[in-house]
Length: 360
Image (tube, rainbow, N blue to C red):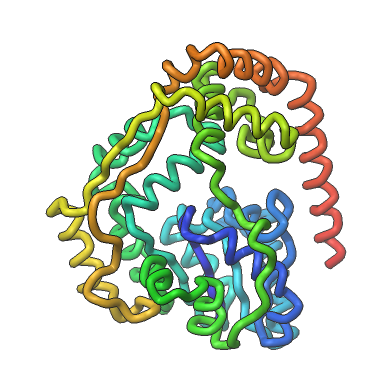
């Protein structure tokens, strides 16, 4: 079998990838190859999912990488497991080509379905970390305007795309139902999809945990001030704040933002809208046979959801916050000394991983 875990983002993908990487040797003993080929991110297969058009080129480096994986699996009589949120952006022709390359392994696509309201909030926070300056209301309104084209608020199109891949299976992991049952989504993957029982968990701190709201809004205030994170750097603002700030500075930022309560706002997102409920009913009707665990009457969470956010204009006007913004914008401006060094270091690390992978 060939299992392709496509995410999407903010559905515990990093947690699953961390544990898959952590258990790579145990997986192989159980009959599953989880290739250790990551360059940009070592635990997952984002390099393989980047630039999908390259898979249509027989002479491309990407095609060679996939063929190497298929050959190793065949030689070891192993199933194949790949995981990257980037695969969720692949078009049908790319998926079909990958399916052909992994034959005779039977392809199964694994997609995690999460309550669209809470997913939209988590995606907003993630977009800030990767360089997006929009406020929570701006982000949500943008998704609402997209209507059926919003991949977070309406996953029907994505799921239908995967079902339409001929001779491929589809498994839909139910994020919220798994939570209601008190199970860990990684255990569901290994037990219910891979059929190998449970495996040890890595430490929780290694997952892609959400920053405190105060830190997220401070990052966004920096992005608003700089006019996005320009320059095409590999190191985004989220990585900068995670790896390059001292504990004391992080604490100071959180305390400074929290000390401006007049900037705090509350946004309410409703789940009783008829279009939202109709979408949930369609998902149950069309895909319930592929859902794991088996669904109940409700797929998603119920009731109104309230989320806090900050008005960046009011926040940036506070003297203490402004002083921190002045200092850190200067230190970490794209193209500056610190960012140049950080990008060189990251490029060197990726180059080293690429070299190591050639000898695996």
